[in-house]
Amino acid sequence: MVRDVTLRQVGGSVGATIPKDMADRLHLDVGDHVLAVETDRGILLTPYDPEIAAGLEAAARAAKKFRNALRELAK
Image 1 (cartoon, rainbow, N blue to C red):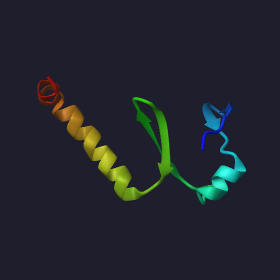
Image 2: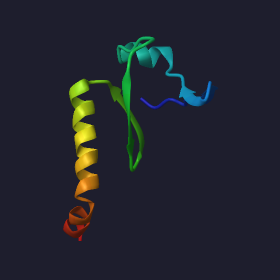
Image 3: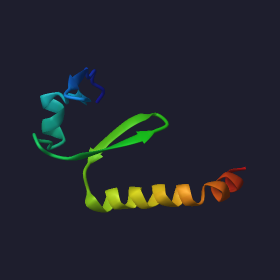
Image 4: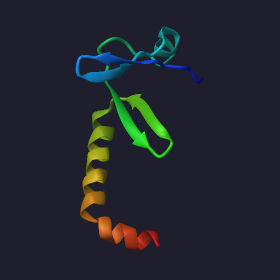
């Protein structure tokens, strides 16, 4: 499902409001945590899972550490 979401100023940050029907279908409630993953196609919001968060952090560290090797492999 695709929905139009308006961004709003929330203190010093920018927030997006998820429509109630979408939040209900995804079992999201006030105070729940989600991961915002920046992709080449936009932003992916996914339910927060500590294991996934740790894996993403490890992958980011590895990509930074082996940046030059990864560039060579990509050729």
